Image (cartoon, rainbow, N blue to C red; front, side, top):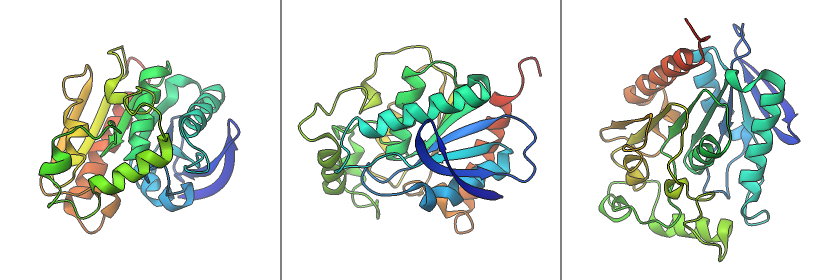
Length: 246
């Protein structure tokens, strides 16, 4: 795996390129951190795991974060990076992947921007209004997230803006044609309902993993389920990014 810093569409980030890369297939990776924390550098290894297993290069976007850069700065940067990749490689070679807050950004792009072949969401935060029942019912099971922490992130990102704005909370977006989307979520996380409520949407498959916590695929080497989920993601990306007719 080769890691290199770059800019795409004016957005800084990190390329994760498998040594065996032979195609133009590319993923835009959008990291988590409640829109406040995280960086492309910190998430390059998770994106790299997906890249090396699938043979698809990844660009991890270092989108602007709150509170210095509130909504819609993160979405604007994600869109700019996506359009930059589209100009370079063609939308037919692109997937959009994200975890947690980045999963919400990824879903927003998949709903708004035309052309991406597929998307993968890891424990996506799709409802900043925090209306999911598991926010309370899974509170004792989740060692990582809480209503208070999520609420603080939403306030720093959105301020007084409507938390049900579909650009911030894609769960509320109007149904529209989108590419195939694969979702992975653990049953021991307060954001479980943010994934389960996507199950009725067209071309969305949701994989639930018993006892797993938030963005558990990042714990490859510790949880057997992490490696299994990464392998499913890699198979999905290879299948959906294959040339039409194969």
